[in-house]
Length: 134
Image (cartoon, rainbow, N blue to C red; front, side):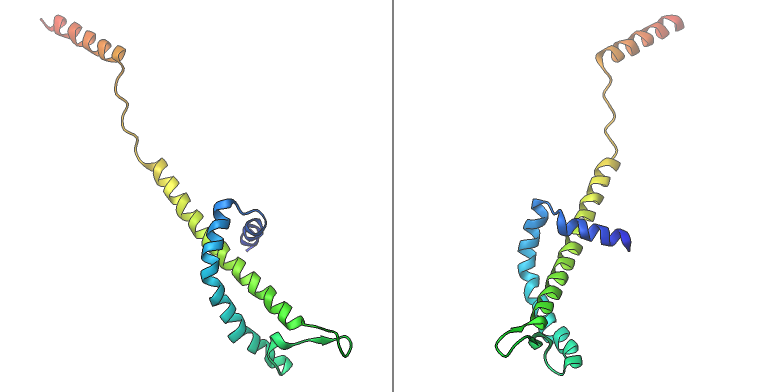
């Protein structure tokens, strides 16, 4: 689990350009799913404890000033879920790349063609064998 969390932390803080491009494209597609999950499932479940929709939970400082803590926490949960989805996606892509790279290394190399010197040496030895047998 620690390795997983370390990889997630590295991804969240040190993504490369390809990872970020994939994140932007796929993130747009996943954003509506994650937002729906937060708005329609998580907030109502958390709202059971507050007797209201969780995104509507506020801390009133004065009559005219309030902090929208529920909305902020919902946005944080949304971000964490999006980052987790992107991390898992990139991790899968990297695993596929790694497997492809291993397959390239594992592919048998074509045998090297003998050099001219090796061919001449073989011909010479064959000619010597022929002379000895005659």
